[in-house]
Structure formats: structure tokens, C-alpha cells
Length: 432
Image (cartoon, rainbow, N blue to C red; front, side, top):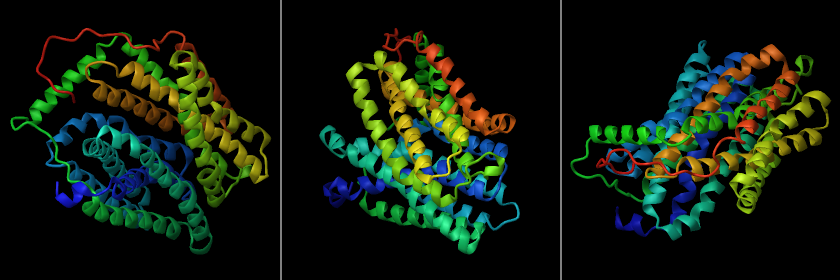
């Protein structure tokens, strides 16, 4: 690491690092959906595409150990920021093609892979470059700038897209939005090439790809030997069954015309609702949920956290039944949705941290557990469109409420406290 970079305050690079983590994530998981709605892609096809695009975050743990073979964490971070920039630029270009959907999904797939890999490297750089006191001191800046990316994406860019849709047309509007995102990633990537500390990976000289592969396999075996692991996997997947489907179909319902059962909101109105009050409600729910779980303990708090996780379904059952026309009422319901999402999400995170990941390979097993959660989300996003088409909007949101029942039942049987696991035959393996 250069002397200048080593002495540079983390405030020079922590905000830009986590802004770069958030922008491509929300580009794929939030902005892309709004673009596809405006491009009038059918609901079932749209949700299948969105489900496939989210797989990368569910399987990123498979290649995370191999990133340690690179010379430095900084090189990985900057490289994948620039790859994300290229993918976003390709989306902007593809929108003008006759086969725009195929090329857009391929480009967004590249962005999702780059973003998922960047997540691993950026968190690793943060941990390796800061001592424990600094990690705690700057943790708030991590979350703050990741949520700045949410605010920019769900708020500012969607409001801008709405104005441009009306003045320039849908294709030109969204092409510009993705060009802006690409430009932002380019600027951040070039800045981070200067600002980031050049923390080198610590890899023994005789470590090879085969060694890393063997370590990964041993970690997976140890994970699958945990007591009650299959019940835990089912619990993790089902925990977000309702929220995963409702979070996918909800924005489509908001934009759909009233004559087909939607609320008929504009892109800008959805942006104002989610990007302002919704973002604030999500952050508030996350903070309050953390304190609530700390107060009661995970075992006593879990049922309440599961119920909160299903407030999005309650909010959309109300919206699809009452069909309000006042924007303030709609925004209030969406704020309830986002508060419940933030509050309840604490439950699955704490379950992964305090139950699933406990043991010899805590970091790696947390990554596997969160990957299982991500794959479950991908599954539910993929099938949600077909279910909605079959049921209609109102019945679909009632179905979302029903999806809470299995996880509530499982919560009575799944261990909510960690159990020790006997190690496998001794092996000279390092933490993955």
C-alpha cells in the first residue's frame, strides 16, 4: 500500500466504496423493473427475468474464496466497478435495438455478476484496511451511503425518468437513466483507483486454486453436517417467501392501469413514495427491529419479526381492496410496507449470524446461509409473475399473506439457538 493511501482518512473512500456497492445493486433490483414496466414487458416474463438476475447474489460465496488469489483487494474492487460501468452502458445502448430485451437482460446479468463480486471484495477491503475500532466507527457510513444509493435510485432517478418519459419518450428516458448510472460508476471507479488503500491479499506462497477449492469443499461439508441444517435451510428460504413475491409484484401493481386492477401511478409517483418516505421507513424499521430483537432476544422476538416481515402483504391487500386515489394514503401504506420489511428482515439476519453461522467457519457459513436466502428470493421472484397472472392482483396479495403460515409453523420447531457440531476428521484448512 502506498504511504499516501495508507495515511488517508477512511472518509476519503468508505462513502464512495459503499455508494458503488449500492448503485449497481439497485440498478438491477429496482430500476430495471421500472424500466421493464415502462417498456410494457408482460408481468410473467418480467418476473422470470428479474428472478434470474438476482441469482448472482445467492451464489457469490462459491467464488468468494478465489478472490484471495488476486494481488490486492483494491484491484478487484476497481476492476468490478468498471465492469459494472460497462454493463450499465450496454443497457443504455441495447434499449435502442429491436431485440432490446435479450441484450438488456444479458447486460444486466453482467452487472449483477460484477456487483455481487464487488460486494465480496469491498467488504473484504473494509475489514482488512481498518482495525476493529475504525470498523465500528465507520459502520454507519457504510449503511448511510448504501442507502444514499437507494435514495438516488428509488427517488431521484425515477422522478427524472418520469419527466423524461413525458418529454422524450420511454426508450430515450431509460437509455439516459442507465447512461447516467454508467457515468456515475465510471467517475466513482476512477476516484476509487486513487482513493482506496492498496490492501494486499494475504495468501501463502504455496496456495493454489486447487487448495482454495479443497478448502471450499470442506467448508460446505461442515455446513451440511450442522444439526438440523435442512430444517434451517427450509426456514431461511420460506422466511422471505411472502415478502419476496410481494416486493416483486407490488411495484407492478402500483404502475398498472386501474382498468386492469392496478393503481395507475406514474414512474415519478412511485419514485416519490419509495425514494422518500419509503426509504426513511425502511431505515427506521431496521433500527427499531434491531433494538427490539436485542431487548427480547431472538427466540422470543422471532414470531413478531416474522409477522412484521409480512406487513408488505397487509399493505398491498389494503391497497388492492380499497384502491385509494389519494397519493398520501398510498404513500402511507407503502411506508408501512417498507417499515415492516426493514423491521422483519432483522430476524433472518440474526438467525444467520447467531444460529446458522456459529462454529469453526463462521464467516464462510454466514455467506452460505445468506446465499441460500438469496436463492430463495430468486425462486420466489421468478414464480411470482405466473402466480399473479393466474390469481389477479388482489388474490395474489392474499396469497402473499398465506405464505407467512409455513414459516410461522416452522418457527416453533426450528432451533433458535446454536448447537455445537463435532468437527470432521482433522484437516489443515484455513477459514474460507
